[in-house]
Amino acid sequence: MTSLFQILMLLIDVAFFIVIAHVILSWLISFGVLNMRQPIVAQIWDGLNRLLEPVYGPLRRALPPMGGLDLAPLIVIIGLYVVEIILRNNVAFFL
Image (cartoon, rainbow, N blue to C red; front, side, top):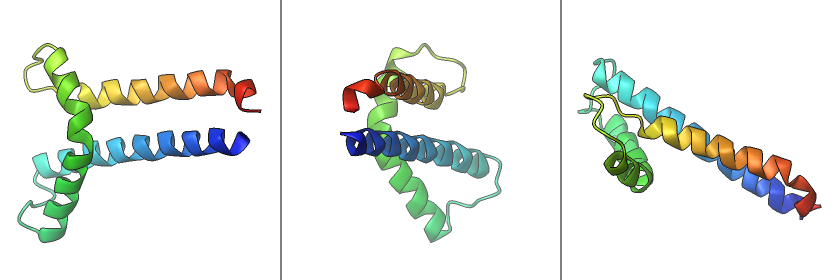
């Protein structure tokens, strides 16, 4: 059961880094550092959007309009930390 706990923690860490990569990539594209006409940038951006849009979409519909500020990644990161805290506090269940 310990391995199940470790796998769950690994999945949370991977999801966290995917969200952070998406945020950083969106900033780099917005500020003109990366060009969407480059094939590798477009492929990475499309892949990250396909992974995260099913999570971001319902959150964006539930959140009020913030004038161009997207809080969906922040809510996802907080949610991942909440799940991690719950798992760590209940680690005895996995032993």
